[in-house]
Image 1 (spheres, rainbow, N blue to C red):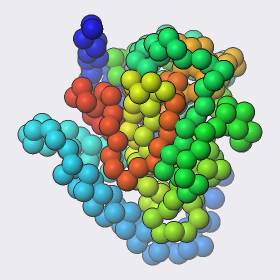
Image 2: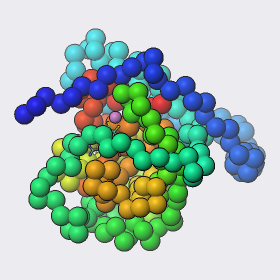
Image 3: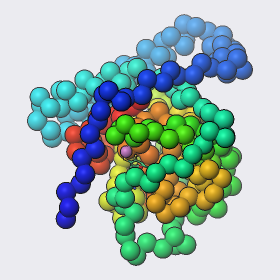
Image 4: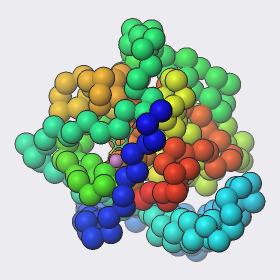
Length: 280
Ligand SMILES: Nc1nc2c(c(=O)[nH]1)N[C@H]1C(S)=C(S)[C@@H](COP(=O)(O)O)O[C@H]1N2
Ligand SMILES: [Mo]
C-alpha cells in the first residue's frame, strides 16, 4: 500500500472570501421570525444552543483517544471555528457562466471494482423511520436545488462549479431524524436534531463527520449533477456531498450511507491530523 498523500494545509493560500450578506427578503423573513417570538426568546434560545453545544462537545471529547496536548490544539481550533460558524452566513455564489470543470481529486472509496452504479442505493440510518434504502429517483423527487459556488481544497486550489441536487435540509425534512425533544423535526432548529451526521462511501474507505448545523446549512447539497451533467465516477457518481462552508475534504464523493449520530463520527482526514471541523 502506498501511504496516503498528505495534503499540506497552506495558510498563505487560505481563501479570504467575505461571506455574502443576507438578501433583503431573507433579512426581512428573519426579522419577522424574531419579532414573532420576541427578541428575548430568541436571545435565550441562542444562549441555550450555545450551552448545549459546549456540553455536547465536552461529552464527545472524553471519547477521543488522541494524546491530550495534540487534542488540546485541535479542540481549540474546533471550538473557535464551531462557535464562529453561523448558519446565516452564506458562501459566495457566482453566475452560472463562471462555472468551470473541477479537477478530480481524491479517490478513496472510489476504487471498489465490484461497485455497480445501477445497484447503488443510499442507506439512511439514525432516522425516525429506522433505516431506509433509497434509490436516486427518490432523491430526484425532492425539491431540486442548483447553486454555483466555489469549491476549496485545503491544498490551496479552488474552482467555481455549478451543482444540482437536493439540499440536505430538504432531504432531512422528507426523511427526518429523531429529535431530542420528540417534537417533529424542523431543519431550522438544529439544536433539536442529533448533533452529528456521518457519511461514508459504499466500501467504507472514505468517511466524513459533520456537525448538524453545517449539514443543515441552506447551501449543503446532496448533488447528482455537476455543471449540468450527471456526475462522472471520478466526481462521485451517483451522489456526492457539496458543502461550500467546508473545505474539499468534507465534500465526500459516492455517498453510500448517511447516518445521524449523537457521537462525533470518525472522519478520514481528521484521523490524519486535520481539523475535524474543517470550516472555511
Ligand atoms: N470518496 C471520496 N470523496 C472525496 C475525496 C476522496 O478521496 N474520496 N477527496 C476529497 C477532497 S480532498 C477533495 S478536494 C474533493 C475533490 O472533489 P473533485 O474530485 O470532484 O474535484 O473531493 C473530496 N471528496
Ligand atoms: Mo482536497
